[in-house]
Image 1: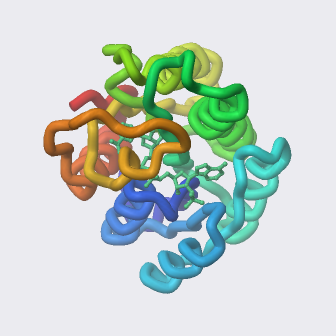
Image 2: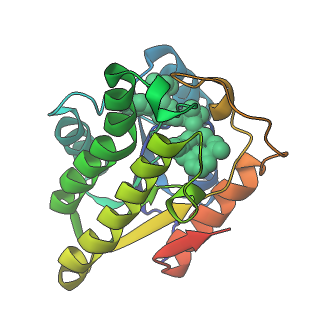
Length: 222
Ligand SMILES: NC(=O)c1ccc[n+]([C@@H]2O[C@H](COP(=O)([O-])OP(=O)(O)OC[C@H]3O[C@@H](n4cnc5c(N)ncnc54)[C@H](OP(=O)(O)O)[C@@H]3O)[C@@H](O)[C@H]2O)c1
């Protein structure tokens, strides 16, 4: 897939991975709409990259549909939708309250599912949807049981929905990065991160994702 002039919407563009992916897509000559929740951070990345932005909060049931429709309006269509929303919680599941579990599953599963559903309706044949799962989908980790479950759920969703949309010519790319130094582990919604080895460099993980979009891949593991 040639990214030059391709029309890309990046959801979670205010995040560590989302912002790096956005920089690289712009660097490849793509036309990018940035979708994000935090208005100040969204304005900052929008100004840095000189890209239009739309608001999204994937916790709101209709927000993904609205944001994707606005991106279509701005770009005159969409070729790629990348969802980089997510959050993390640490600690044994017995220490995680319902409100934390719900926020985790909304940001990491329901959100990307809503974005994917909206994107399917917006993409034409040859389109690509990227969801960022995690290495814990394949290697569920104690102390991160609920987070691991969200990532396994998203990967299962990606594999199944890929079959639903294959005939329409839409490709699903499921990305499962290892620990990456975006700061995600330092701002959990509950608990404290265990001692982690030095993580991957966000720019390099983003490059692998953008390369995989261009290469026609359906899976990225590191
Ligand atoms: N970093 C890692 O080690 C690592 C490893 C494997 C997988 N991942 C996955 O990669 C994805 C991106 O993570 P990251 O490292 O870039 O973390 P990050 O820097 O914390 O970015 C997370 C992004 O998700 C957005 N978000 C969270 N809840 C949202 C909601 N309800 N509606 C809209 N946006 C929402 C945040 O928006 P705000 O700016 O508004 O908060 C932020 O832009 C996540 O799914 C994460 O689980 C990360």
